[in-house]
Image 1 (tube, rainbow, N blue to C red):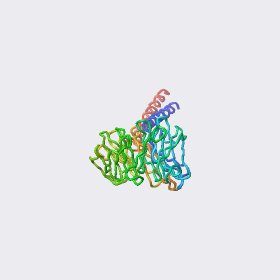
Image 2 (tube, helix red, strand yellow; image 1 turned 90 degrees about the vertical axis):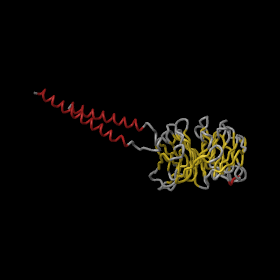
Image 3 (cartoon, helix red, strand yellow; image 1 turned 180 degrees about the vertical axis):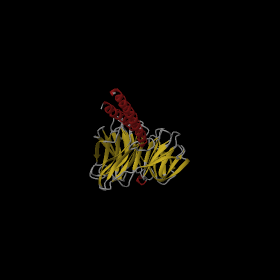
Image 4 (cartoon, helix red, strand yellow; image 1 turned 60 degrees about the horizontal axis):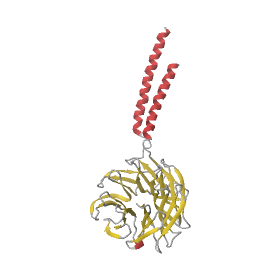
Length: 386
């Protein structure tokens, strides 16, 4: 009886050790896919990794013609900690979010409930718990919506959208504004603050550079009809993504190279290895090298949800990626916030399948060894009985 107990204990020990090994491998990189629902239609347009290791996601929540800014805060595993909405009786949509130095958040988008025109830029500042601290509107009698927001070197903010660039101080007070590209008929989809303290906006077929005070420096072609996103490169040039294309231009606006892809690249980032990553409307994440050559691409399919896809991507502190966007439920027909966390190769492993074989072999070996010991002990006991 003692030998049998020893055998069972040994097997349990080996299995537990093996499971611990599997658990330690699975926990080495946090990867997951989450959806967030509030009973209303929701769309996620922007996300940031927060200073506590979690994520903040901005977008909209509601039913047209009444939608609100929506801000969701999660922990590092993607579990929602809180959800806040901000708005009036009409439509407000947040397209961009940044974390502030005090641990709060600033959201930028458009409002039809407040301001001077049919739609105006709307900037909302919250504390670390999503409680609104202040809000500002910017714009004239035309329709203006902010699609891009950056936290500037001096602690303030810059936001751009429909033919308008606005620079504010840390409290959202406007310091200057500049119209461009034919006013509200020109939509800027992306904005960066440049290394010289100026600003570059891109949208449609144009790339426009301003100095630190908003004065126009140059206006160039973006080499595509539907430019959506841009980044400044280490050599002072720019890389631009749009429908089916990725284009690199030098500091003078001359094209250095371009690559074509299938689909609309909605968000572009420069990665820590010198390459690029961007999301495609068809639920794809594409990683390229420094010349725009595809290194890998991943497609994400989520059960119980239909079309739509990601709008934003960031590189996370662990070298992986996080994507935010929208999915439509097959059951309710409602749209929901969708956030994906991947590893450095864009993969979301549900369980590391390569561990199964080593686990099986370890358990088998444990059983063989313990059976041999049990047989030996049984023979010894028989000899002693004689």
